[in-house]
Image (cartoon, rainbow, N blue to C red; front, side):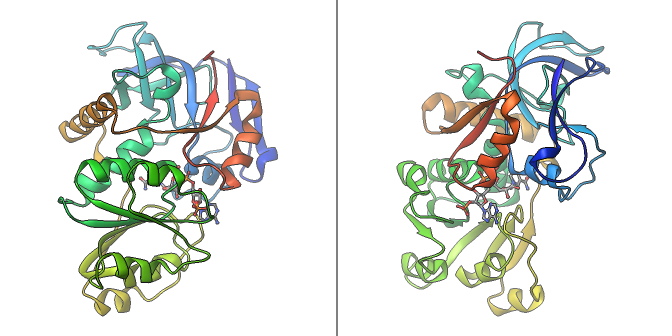
Length: 329
Ligand SMILES: NC(=O)c1ccc[n+]([C@@H]2O[C@H](COP(=O)([O-])OP(=O)(O)OC[C@H]3O[C@@H](n4cnc5c(N)ncnc54)[C@H](OP(=O)(O)O)[C@@H]3O)[C@@H](O)[C@H]2O)c1
C-alpha cells in the first residue's frame, strides 16, 4: 500500500511516498480503507523532530483520517464493515496517510449527519481539541470573554464556533492581515493582527479594562508571557503548543502579578472512548448537524504532493484544514 513516510527528522525532503506492507490488525482495532487524511501542526513537528513525544523513525505520518471500515479486529462490536467513519489514528497520531490504517476502536468517530468523507476528515482533532479546551480543561460560562491566538487556524476556527455556541465572546490574534476573515464570519468579535496591533490593549478595550477570562495560546515564544497581561485577575492561560518557539519567562512572577493561573492541555488526555469523550463526539456531531460548526478546507493535496502540503501549512497561509487525498475521489 502507498504511505507517506518520514525517513528521519528534518526538512520536507525527508517525506517520501513508499510502497509498504498492509498493517497488522490487533485485537480491539478497526482497519480503515483511508479516503482522506488531514494535516495538523503536529505533523510538521514530527517531521522536524521537535514533537514533544518521541517518534521512532522511519514513521508513517498522519494523525486523522476518514474512510470506510475494511475489517474488524477481535473483540470489536458496534461497527460494521463498509461503515463510513472518521478517526484519530491512536495515541501517537501516526500511520494515517496510508491506504489502510488500523485504529483502536475508542478513536473511531461515526460520520456526523450531513458530512461526506472529504469534509469528515477535517473535524476530529481540531473540534475535539476545541471542545475539551472549553468544557473539560476550562469550564466556560456564557458571557465569558476568550482570546484565541492563531484564531484563523483549524483549532482557532473550531474554538470560535464552539465558543459562540456556548455564549462566549471571542476575540483572537492572527499573524497576518486577512487571515481573520473566517473567524469574523463565524462570529469572532475582533481579530487582531499581531504585527500591527497590541493584543493586550485590545483585550482591555473590549472588556472595559477588566481583562479577558481565558487565553488559549498555541504560539509560545514571547506571546505566551504577554498573554498573562491580557487576563482579568484570577483569569487563566491554557497553552496547547509552541508554534512560534519555546517561551522563556519567569512563570511564578507572571502568575502573581494578577493572581492568574496557567495550564497545559493535550486533547488525547481527554480519554478517548470514555463517557466524557463520547459525549464530546455527540455534542460536536449535533453542532455540525445544526450548521453552527463548519471547518473550511484551506487546500487539498494528493498523497504524492505531501511535501507541497507541508510547505503550504508552514507558509502560515492556511485558514482552515489542509486535506490529503489518499483513496478518496
Ligand atoms: N495540545 C493539543 O491537544 C493540541 C491539539 C491540536 C493542535 N494543537 C496546537 O494548536 C495549534 C494550532 O493547530 P492547527 O493544526 O489548527 O494549526 P494552524 O493554526 O492551522 O497552524 C498553526 C498556526 O500557528 C501560527 N504561527 C505563529 N507563529 C508561527 C511560526 N513561527 N511558524 C508557524 N506557524 C506559526 C500561524 O498562524 P498565524 O500566522 O495566524 O499566527 C499558523 O497558521 C498548533 O500549535 C498545534 O500544535 C494542540
